[in-house]
Length: 375
Ligand SMILES: *Cc1c(COP(=O)(O)O)cnc(C)c1O
Ligand SMILES: [Zn+2]
Image (cartoon, rainbow, N blue to C red; front, side, top):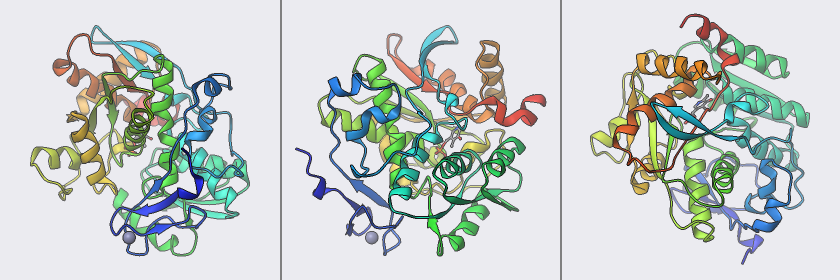
């Protein structure tokens, strides 16, 4: 039974609980928050609604009184794509309004922000999360300040600015950008895609859609990119909820793809660590997953390992090859999105022939014209 009064934030570190209407994004102890919530799946209702992610409204931890901030997003096509002669079902999440799957998280998080009456948020990003938060804030008439590394793709910078966000270009690494936003987050609400658990209430709809589009069943495995793991952890949460609600009878194995140039999670797995090692990050064309210090790194390790999946490293040449191959089939995706497909190509060797494989195009190629011209 769904008992709304039972819903709360819960600290992963100390177990402290908070009401969901608190404007917080982490625990007083500094720990990461999760949301405790009992999702409901009434399949007849869901199927009778419009094809967007709000069809799963009772499975999302927003108060009934919260009004969706929406562009009608979600329920992206799940298309068969030929990858190295194998049929792989690929979710077309580059087709979201701001051009990446980050809109899943931004739609739910900014709906919550609006419901709380917050008028200004800050966010840091390698680009696409900033675009998504800026877009939904524009829709909701909320002011956003977006912090990004100075070398972010110009297409993403233009998008953030045109949405009316205040853009802060931070010299140095992605980690320097994270440090810069933390100071701003002391004063404004931090609409963080990696810290804020409402973001994952949005990205989990990836799992719901895949499951419904396959006729309410689970694929055998998922191949997903992993930087901060905002899609991966959302998908893992979504499939877990569907399993617990007995909508599906198994949970897919998750293969997590990292650029070899920045692979702290793959390193942790290889070395049998339960924490994330410090790494020396190199240049990668996959800017969206170049995350050296993933906030929820330990959670990603656990999600992948408990699913029976593994981590895959892809080299720069493999990413570019996968990108060109997808474009030649008519799928115009950005380089970071191609990293996941390069991961599919590598994983195929170890995946049984008749497994149903699901992967994703995470971001649109039009965001990265500069890089596409230089391939
Ligand atoms: C954000 C993003 C990813 C990966 O996301 P993480 O949350 O860092 O794991 C992959 N592809 C694109 C295009 C993205 O924008
Ligand atoms: Zn705590």
